[in-house]
Length: 175
Image 1 (cartoon, rainbow, N blue to C red):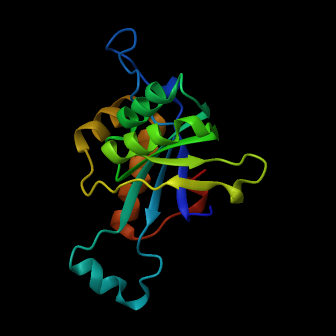
Image 2: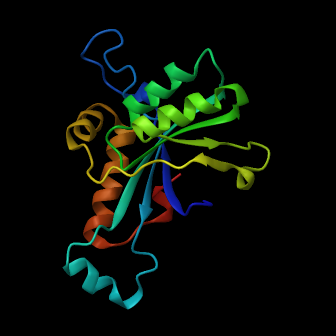
């Protein structure tokens, strides 16, 4: 809510799997979101849309308890895998050990994944430690794969489609 995003939880257990054991491993993000870029456009909104301006950005979040030297690469590359389809991908953790600071800076610089420290006691005190780099194009092949196997993700993409068609969101359709 602090970032003014429309978010949804993705339950990987709702996915079909016809690829065998681990066929869907590292495919689903934990949380997905949409940022409405048109909220502040005012009366110029209709004109901007005529010129094909981007209406929204899609975000992907992988949530972990702690990032430390023993799990940073596994958790980071899981985030890369789960978030490659989105405009922005974030790895979120409640604790980020200081001794991995240079590692996460290097990995984030190479792969564009952002890092968020989540304050579970006071979520408004959470901080973006490293901002994600924007991917200008969505990966529709990956989006389609997740869409076809997961009902939560299908709902998310359908809400995005409805927003693109109408310019409106229903708060009740988001988590």
